[in-house]
Length: 264
Image (tube, rainbow, N blue to C red; front, side, top):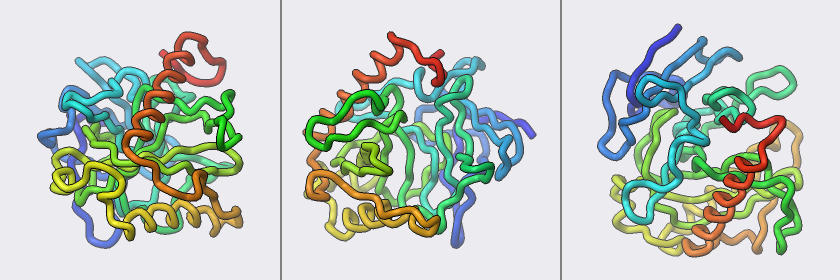
């Protein structure tokens, strides 16, 4: 199975949406329509890949899509997992051109045990360096692009490149590794007019995000995840500092090279 379209549209869902649902050719107004998508393999199998193209040439969503959005103060989010879906999709950092694929652990495709309630993805041109210890938290980065939790009302399809407004960040510690979670909202979502910093986000939303990520691995007999900074969400100014630090780490990674990560 192989098809190409400019973006995947917002998913319509009843109950749980499918993370793999393609859409007709077309783009949301604030999605970046310059990027094409090419699907290979069958959804829900180890062979499934969602690749990115520009001018009919393969590109990396990690390395070739700019970090900053066209709108002042925004960043480009690459959507890996649409809200209300369960397949654990991610940019494949070790594969050529870094397509989105379903994560595999011990030979089994990974799914969350319940749906994630927000759109989930990453910021391109960032990297959480596993060789650098955070001075306060005393743990190292998780070797991935920085994660984004988008809290708007619409389900964003896998592969969408969306301009988002950062609001705050949570320092999750997963198996001893630092795994930042940037909280953001799509700039065309009505909430973007109301929310400018983490204190504008309702406590129930922040608590929901923290507790979801605390507990989501426990059905697999994994321990609870923990959080730095007294489990607080840090403000937008600190969030931008974290993003800039991970962007600097990515630039250094590109300069130094890697034996295991695909870097163009």
